[in-house]
Image 1 (cartoon, helix red, strand yellow):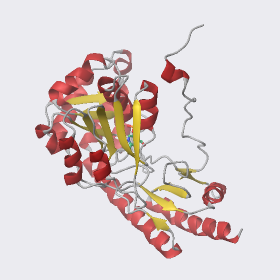
Image 2: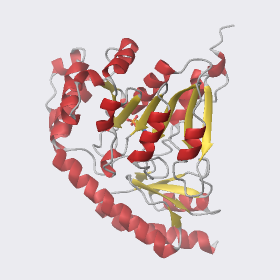
Image 3: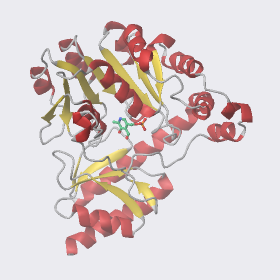
Image 4: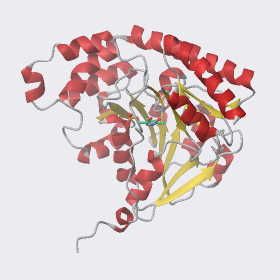
Length: 353
Ligand SMILES: Cc1ncc(COP(=O)(O)O)c(C=O)c1O
């Protein structure tokens, strides 16, 4: 009988995080502001040739390289950042190697590591959920081939300092150290300028969040030209479709849209934090487009109560160390006018019962 590789046979089927699209989706950290009108105009102007011909990824890589101030050879465009993670892990992780990261973090790291059948080393963060830097440093061994750090992190929203991240990069010269900057625009700190000095460092970005292009699937991996060259050897030649590539130029050109959106998100997350202070709920100061809050034993009832009010939020209780926690994406200012009272009501309702 045909059997898949052992690590695959042992996996449980991956379940999409999309539970529903009825109501306001504050459960997936997507942009609630949509995308730049310039991107929509470009989409509407697409010609038959734009879709009938194979896409030319190099064109997009040059645009992104110019935007980031790096060489085009350092940039690999991918089908969302998820694909960049998959390519990076596959390039460096062999059967006896180890993937190292701290929990809680982005769910795809363990999923990809387990599918590859490598040793997945997860270190718990403390009660403050900050990156456990000394513990990570202590666990670097010759087997460590990839270290993955989301900065700022999902689901906590917390960012580690550049100095601490560089300590890890420098302590593991034989491992690929990935700094996943999916939420960079909401935080502002990046390790892009450090790439020149650290050939084992990779930075990943996405257009799914601040640019509002999650549906188009556009991710970026940036690293030393030599290392990116290895990934290019086996990345599929047409992994990024022509529609996404056509929109990329407009998305990058409309920085005013990104700037406005980021300002609105920062304002919205401050409103959420203020409300949680008022309600006496513990939350983590976020550098992203969402806030993690500890509701406690009634987290599930709270999520259901919010859903009855037409708002989807994410029960994060299943993430390590996140018992009783809920993650809430920041909506537009008008949406937040309705979300904040809904949270108050849902908390009151769950406290009553
Ligand atoms: C930390 C982190 N990295 C990567 C991704 C994946 O981004 P993409 O939509 O580009 O695959 C996400 C999406 O939620 C994320 O939170």
